[in-house]
Length: 483
Image (cartoon, rainbow, N blue to C red):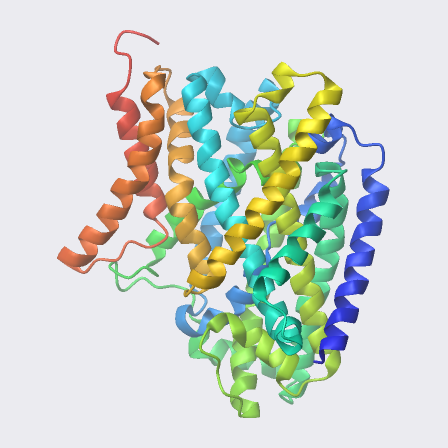
């Protein structure tokens, strides 16, 4: 795929994205930016959420991961489905009843200002790192396909990418995101399905033969029940899937801003349940694509890249397939990454403005608009800097790296909300920032200790231990004679 073709595809997609964002974001006020005025029909939100749940990391890393992890990711997807039920029937009614703009306002109401700040800062760190990693994935591909060929540095790549994300989310916020997520879902699913069809044709297989090849592949194993010490063990991944979904979606400002843009909690629940069903099929198709990619690498005699994340770009752009496959790959990657980055940037802006600066309580609407726009620009600049840091330090499969980041940073948030929902006790609020720092540190020490002493590997379920340390800390800080 030539740099000119990449630039033409990027320009065309960005132009379409900006048109959709401009049309949907006109005359958007602060309520429209933060909550889309809670007027999104549930079926539109559901279709948008299918794409919103997928990032550039999903698009590249999930297919590439099948060589090392087979279809074990489906064990987490099963947990995701249970987690969606928890979000729909436990969290959504509470958040709607309290009419929250930021989820972390709940912590202020339940425990106090220090707990509120601790939860908001945990989200800030988690989302800044996770979103930057997602954008870093697309930046590495663009560096390979365009910037390196023109001798342009990686920092310029990151700056241009984040400038475009900032521009298209600057005015409309969540209101624009819902419409651009619909565009993303269309592009993502079309790219995925058509890529599978073109690769199947290039392998000379019919649909039935393709299904048999995938089923017979050693990479298509789903269940891992034989080794509890393995980080792919079913129950570890299943439980991790539940808590990860609750933490990342149910307690993640970016995803819940979309869900809570619906008029009523019942509408939001319909949206979440439909999204859960669709997510199963879409992720399964990504894994099928992964098997086909490795079959094609063998068929075409290609040399496997060092990183599994580079397998899909290699086959799509330089694997000898029709040029349309490269275009489809790029459209899917761009749509997934720009939407995920836009959602994260909007959520970071919302949480920082509402939770940390507490601007809505201190300023009128005009001043709030000015503050929100400055924070939005600052978040974009900060994310660009973190992307640069990943450019020098990322050495793992991106999907694994994302969940490692989540396990450390979302654990305290999950623990705080669980304690708040399932007890009526109060805690000594002023010490909660210490708990939020201590829990990830203890989790890291536990992960290292059990590996060194018992050769037992804690995988994605580290989030559970992290939340447990947070809850233990809150129990120690509990006010004994207050309810």
